[in-house]
Image 1: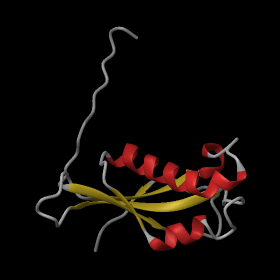
Image 2: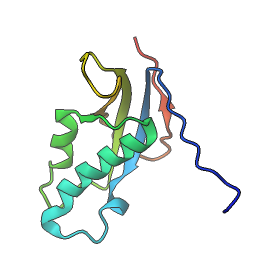
Image 3: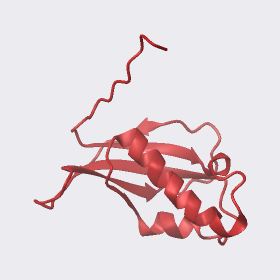
Image 4: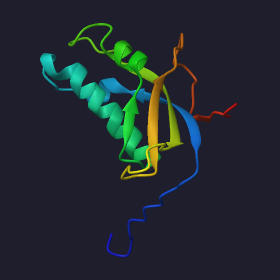
Length: 119
């Protein structure tokens, strides 16, 4: 639309949220030997888009979960906790980064995005 402008709001506050990512629709049509690597890239892309940081770091447990069924048979969905944190490094390009960690759940039915209160 000609009258509509893209507004990018960069938020600088520390926040943690839980999301369910539907990996299956994001890797549909990808060849077998590229499915798990593509899933990892799509999780990073999702975190970058939702949290607004270009520096995204994946937890080891999340990576193990994505690769748990092999390179071909990636799990259909994954529940993740996205935490936007302050960067400790002084000479970093960005002052915020996103840490993506895996949240084990028995069932994905009825789960919605929720804000996690940090302790």
